[in-house]
Length: 240
Image (tube, rainbow, N blue to C red; front, side, top):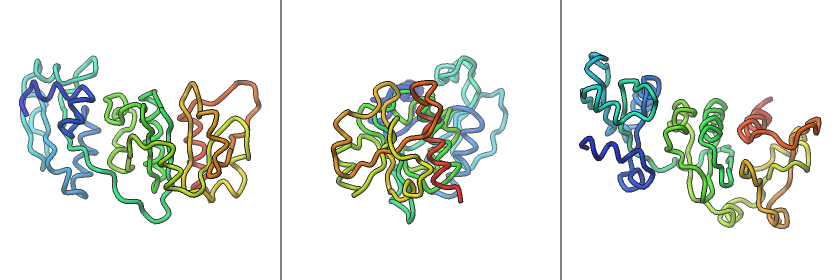
């Protein structure tokens, strides 16, 4: 790809058309290289580095470019001197014992990246995003996720109606409901969280598959940060 085509990958429309995205920074490129050792499909990724970085050890195809061109590819204030162009891969098939975290219209890229990082840490989670959610390949999401995209299957544009067709029973997180410390909290294949500001649609509680759960607190403030809520629930699901 030429420089102009690469620059277009800053935009969601171009990423979807090309089925590729930009990954910036030494740590993330190292995560990519480790993932490519496991998954041959990632070996079509290409690395771009500046002359100043010298030789970059990689089995991936590598291009050396000047600092001015690197600055045009960078989405950070100070270009890190290394960017990779990575193919978007379809999410892996469901695994035995896998739990699904569904995020309804999540908007904050930092929240999504943090959630993916948590799910990767605990393992055997899938992340499902409903329409109107932030793009998981947004640069801010990628930075916050710290390589979690290579470990957590992510599905996009999954409607709530489709979700209830896939799963016969779904836990939804609300401010009122059964405590997540209840043993039955672990009995669901899918866990649904609402938008940061609006929560879940008001009519969703009337649907049979959904059971309301809550994270017990003091009640001093209205709600928890979404990423914090998911992190607490994920820990509750995996702890012995």
